[in-house]
Image (tube, rainbow over the protein chains, first blue to last red):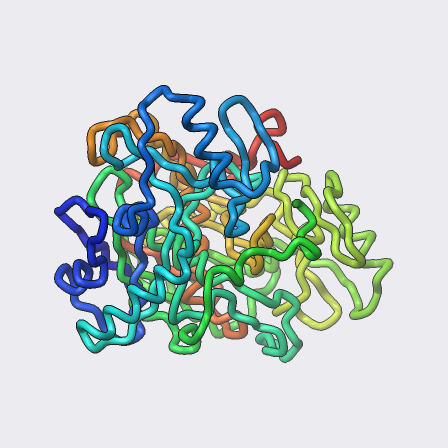
Length: 228
Length: 228
């Protein structure tokens, strides 16, 4: 498996055609996964809000607008559940790598965003790639953040190993692997945070990973969630 | 960045020299990360317990022995905090890919295990590699499991981006990235669960990732943990 960072020099504006930008910037093959950071998807879709540095009331109002429920609060940090069902800090509102006086909000429907990018790449370049849209989330119990999948198309986000057998012929206990999050995490390793690398190609994944799927499947439903 | 699975044909026995096995099985370079699954480390260190299929009382006793605290219970599933401070299902006790009538326990000190493997590889092959020992953990709020780092040597598990500047010259808000977990997740993608691939080489990471560090640093201390 190989990971190839895709540098994009130009700033992404509202209405930008991310598929065309990707096709011009790199050489995509069938069964590649194109990992795209939330930041550029939000900018291309106009999911940007005006917010001056230090406007704490404005920030709180934006977090409330983007939030279904607050799980925990500590000082200015709110651990929120977004309208998509994602649990993350401050509803995913982000100030880094944005124009001064603005923040990005998460895409309204990141799975739809991923489907559109994948379909348009197929139209433009004739290749069938999967697309994963990533954001950087904190985790319970473990320090540090890691990238996860918030949108996906053309890939099965969770691979069900139930029924497969282990090396010694027994049925495996560990059942469902969230490969979408593992791909998101892998891609982050080749993306220097400060630089203009909003996309990464992940090449060489098993063809069995590809198929219909959406990152919405990764959200754990309330009845089976022990921590919500 | 490139990920290379390392196939090991032989079963790992108690006392096995994992460093020698790795050196014989693959070509390691300076600044490679050798990712090793918990399963083979536990087997090599004799962290194996007898447990017949269906011995539920024996299983509960083992979980209790390996556990500092139970966070949640549902049926046979206990979400536990191990003596290392890791939060995972059933104290990481695992029945897959073990000899019949046995389970593996987590290594007593996985950071020490990683340091020993790294030092011995340096002795045997003259190369300076980092070592990450991984296990497969569930997560709060998100379906599916993903591999994380439970032991590390020669690599800084969390890269602090505080003070670095983003593309537009502002200081980044997202501060600490857990690259050890991202490397563990990445390596899992090239490890078919059923097959004998207990090690993965991760090649091409930035040299700034390498240095002193231990996976114990990833455990979030109680005072800053909102979910424990």
